[in-house]
Image 1: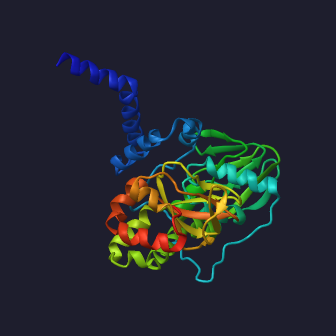
Image 2 (image 1 turned 90 degrees about the horizontal axis):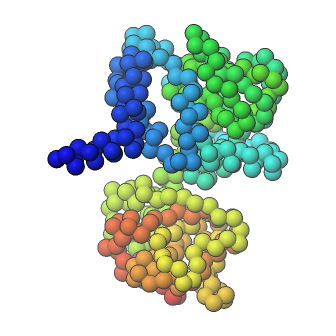
Image 3 (image 1 turned 90 degrees about the vertical axis):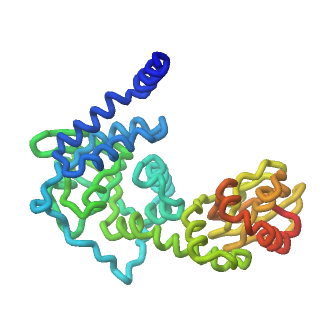
Length: 349
């Protein structure tokens, strides 16, 4: 028993659990939260991030959060109604600006978990804006119908909350303004340019349509892929939806190897956009694969090594399942999948 107690104490000390649990409870008390468990969960969720996110986590803890009000006092903006004729804006940018936005999104907690196609659409929709020293970019309490989300490109901004003063200094790469858009709530803080500032702004409609609505479009697209695959005909709608929910997305530039001949297979791929070629010993061994085609199944079904190298011939986006997901969800259809794959690409995997 003594050894067990010692191990428990050591574990708690190693992960600083006592301190962070106490901080989480104090945060709920400080907010006078009606749902303290939600505040505690949200607080502790940040500590599940990878080590490289530590600085980002610190920055987000410093970002102001408005004290929740009672249900009768709560003030929120009108419910968002997506326009039926909306099309994602495309704003021309330099290659340098495109690279900056892509890198920023990959390091932002809100945007890094989006699919590559989502981030590409966001990058194109951002518009460059400038502010002079002293300009209020965001005003606390504002609940207008036209609010933007910002990524700071140059300069320094002061982020302040009434009654607390400055809570953070925003510098290049910091994003702000998302809370009000995510929760249909008034602005939680004031953001003021301390010097000339350049930034990229995303309008509220594009923010909501891309960040909050595009997942439905992706789900529909994924289901379209699955419904077009003859070997999945035995599956019911629920099983296909489960597969669609498990699919992940990855993009490759032109002339990039996706799988290598002789490697161990750990993924099954479906092409969403683009084209790939299959080569064995440097020679193409099948027709080019395009949208809706799949590859990589034989190495998973047989546990053999990859029989060919698959390379993108143009910028290509693929959907994929890991080995465990593939076996669990598609294992019963192994014969059908193998037959279709062999007919399409001979012996290529």
